[in-house]
Image (tube, rainbow, N blue to C red; front, side):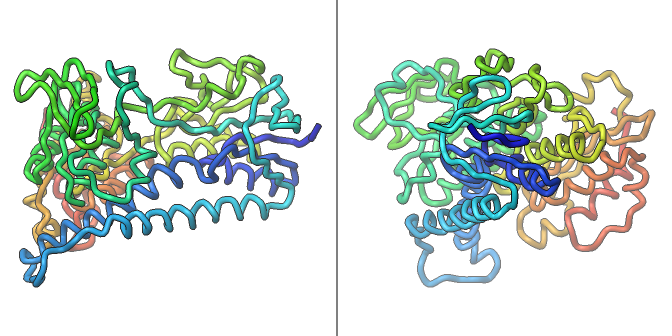
Length: 457
């Protein structure tokens, strides 16, 4: 039996910094990791996929070289083994850094193995029983595999197994037209694969406004990606080419035959093998741990952070979970999840940066609105880079003059959105940003211009 002050299960984005804070406070902490240090972001999420996106962007620019006056004697060739090796190196360095950091913390004991609760204050890992008054669950999530008819008869890929590919698929069928699926669809088409995206709903990225969804579709179709929406009854079956996907769309062939199929239809939490029932921890029907506004579970002394609590699905929200818990427990503060202003990005090219409400959500709120919108063709920086696809839009509460939400879909959108996110966090009138003097030439310089042209909805 090992007695410590705190147990942290999982080494995703929230776990390691929390361990460091607890150890720095002079307390003893045990960190349990059953597989790879660093969690989803480091191993199968942001770091490897954005490294692949960067390689795909390089290939895309190489093919467009003549547009910029750069002429190649031969067409660029994709060495997928080298592309994969580059991503693997980035991941290995990050993973090793996390583990080295944890093992070097004074007062921190790192335990490798599967954790299972045996009570509200104790967790077993193999022969070791670790007991602590505080336990923090940070076990993340994984790809959801839906029970499509025929799924047991075919080989399929998820976001994790996609990263093991060292060759370009002949024809990749992506089932799921949201963030993960669209990023893989575009990157592998740029690597040279034929790509078809199959989406059950009527449009891509259904959480976004319809004009954003349509702009995404136009960009992908222009690149040569086939989009099949309104796929009402998705099925899969073996095919001589690899796999056949039934789509039953209103238009087009009823089935799509591909060499590989990627399932990108959502995520599920890694909570099924923790023995949470032994601790009395409540979960919802999908397996997400239920937490209050301070990320505490229904059991005193147990908290859940990151993807497994269903309160955020991003690396940055997981890190913010750590900040909230650490501030409340170690700094005497009173921070809450409900205070969080969430932004995120879709990393196709060009990227989509988003914060706050969509226009549809703002209209549904019943507020009196001011709206603004500009195409990226009016942004000098985009014109100079030859990347004028997309648009930017902002919604403002006309009475309070505070920004409710914004989308910047275009080159640099994932960075430019932070100026708006900061203003929302500062809780000040949009006039403060409208009067700013931005740097030229940038994408951000159009934000004050756009704010100066707001019109009643």
